[in-house]
Image 1 (tube, helix red, strand yellow):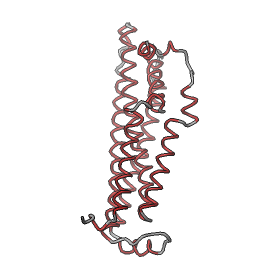
Image 2: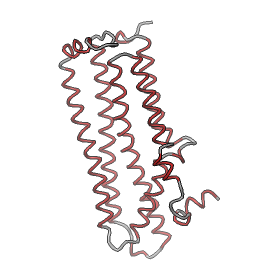
Image 3: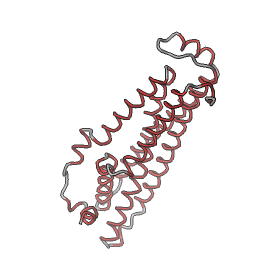
Image 4: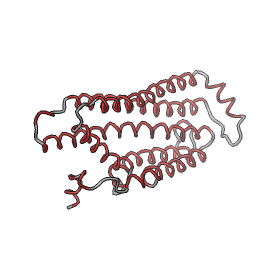
Length: 244
């Protein structure tokens, strides 16, 4: 059986392993039994609490300032993604020089121009994916800002307001999830650069990244402190009802 683009079976395994780990980290914190221990899940409760506090403030200038600060930070990563994509596109035009330079590094395997360009395209696709995630996150956060301004303060029904705050918290968490996906794409792009050395370095970088992300998502000091009881259960009535 012929191997596409002249890659070795180890190269194909390394690429499939890389993609499998990436997909795993896009589902593990949200759809597995471990999701309640993830930072994203723990922060979702505090997003809901933020929206509850927003409803009880006389003025929402503070909340809009926080929302604008979050959007500005995501915009930085979105613009960075485009800059990196532009740089990688320029690298496609200097394939021969880059391959000659790469041969001088120790432990590197011989690379054809087609293989080099495929690896560059993998990085371009990864950063382009990150850009679309950041752009969608910005758009969602802009929608949340509009919904904050459209909060029905005058209805006087606490149940309606609490339901509105919960939905706002869920929408805010959704925007944060897309931002996290974009950040993870940055991390996996860094692991993919190890493929330019050799497939074993690619595999080792992927494993190392998986261990780092797993610890930071589920077992970091931040997650441990955040998972403690910072507030009484009465502040999260919906969660208490679900446990019952």
